[in-house]
Amino acid sequence: MSSSPPSTRFVDAVEVVLAAALAPLATLAWYLPGGLLSPFRWVVLGLLVLAVLRLVRGPRRPWGRGELLAVAGFAALGALALLGRLRYPSLTHTADLSHVVVALSGCLAMLVLSRRRVVLWGLLAGWLFAAVMAMTVGLWETFTHRHLPGNGPAKYYGRWKGWNQISSFFDNPNLYAYMLVVVIQLALLAFLGARGWWRLLAVAVLGLALQQLWWTDGRTGVIVVVATVILLACRHRIGRWSVVIAAVLLGLGMWWRIGIADDIRFHLVHMWEGRLREGDSTMVRATLFKAAWTMARDSSWLGVGPGGFAERVLLASNPHKAKRYTNPHFGMSEVLAELGLVGLLILLALLVGASIACLAALRRGQAGARGRRALASMTAVMLVTVPMLTLANSSWLRQPLTAAHLATLVALVVQATASDSKGAQELASNW
Image 1 (cartoon, rainbow, N blue to C red):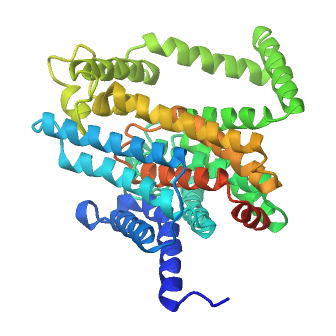
Image 2 (tube, rainbow, N blue to C red; image 1 turned 180 degrees about the horizontal axis):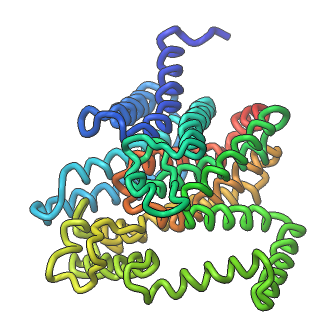
C-alpha cells in the first residue's frame, strides 16, 4: 500500500495544529488583537477552509441523518442571527454577528475534520496546554495576591479582607471558572478512559483545576462539577444507590444543621432568597431573563439580533431592568433574546439530540471498549450541562472560549458516535 503524498500529510498536520491552537488562543484572547486581527478567528477560518477542501477533494463518505440535522441546525442559527441584524440594524452590531458566525464556523469545521480521530487528539492536547498556561498564572495569583492587568475585579483588592478572586488570563473570574469546568470535565474523561501515566496526569490536572475553581469563587462552576459527578455516578447501579444514599444523608444533615450539610443548606437558601434581594446575582439573572423573554416576544420569537440585548435592556420601553447590567448573565437568556425562542429551541434540540446519540451509541454496543464508553457517556454529560454552565459568565455568545468549547463538543460527539468499526477500534486502542 502506497503512503499518502507529502502534500496530503502536510494538510493533515495543519489540521491538527490548528485544532490544537483553538483552546490556547481562546484562553489568551483578552491579551491578543481582536476583530479582524484576532488570531483565534483566523484559526477558525483556516479550519473551515480545510473542512471545505476535505469535502471537495477527499474520499466521499455518506452523511448520516444526525450530521445533516446538525448542519441544518447550525445553518438555522446563523440565519436567525443574520435576520436579526437585518431587521434591527440600529440596535445590533456586525461585531456581535461575527461572534456567532465564528462559533458556528468552528462547529461546522469540526463536524467534518474530527472524523479523523487525530484532530480530536489535537483539540484535547490544546486544552491541556491551555490549562497548564492558565493554571500557572492562577497559582501565581493565588500565592502572590497579584494579578494581570486584565483582571477586572482585582481593582477591588484590599477593600475587603481576603478578597483575591483569580481570573488568570481572563478579564472575569467567572469566565476562568467556565474554562476550569470544561478542563475538569475533560480530565474526568481522561481519567475514566485512559490508562497508566495518562490517568495520573488527569488526576493532577483535576486536583489543580478544582483548587483554582475554588479561588475564582465561581459558585455556578462548583454546581456544574457536582452535577457532572452525579450524572457520571448514575451510569451504574451502585453509583445510583450511592447518589440516593448521599442525598438522604445530606437531607438529614440539613434538617439537623450538621457540619458541611448546614453550610450547603445556608448557601442554597441564600441563593433561593436572592431572587427577592435587590442586586443579588440570583435576582439579577431572573430579571434579565424576563427582559430576554420580553425581547423575544416583541420580535415575533425570532430574536432582536446579535448585540441587541445590551442595546435594549436599558431602553425606557424595557420593563425589566437590573440596575446597570447590560449583559444577560445567562447564555440561554442571551440566545433567547438575540436569536429568539426559535433559536433557543434549536440550540437545546442540538444539545439534547447529540447527547441522545451518544447514549444510543452505548446501547448499540459501538462504545464497547473502556475508552469508547467513557467518551460516549462523558460527552453526553458535557452536553446536558452546557445550559447550566452558561450561568457562570456575564456574556456567552461573544466569547472565543465559547466557540472553542462548542467546537470541542462537536468533535467529541462525532467520535463518540462513530459507527465504522475500524475507526472505533483504532480510537479505543489509543486510549
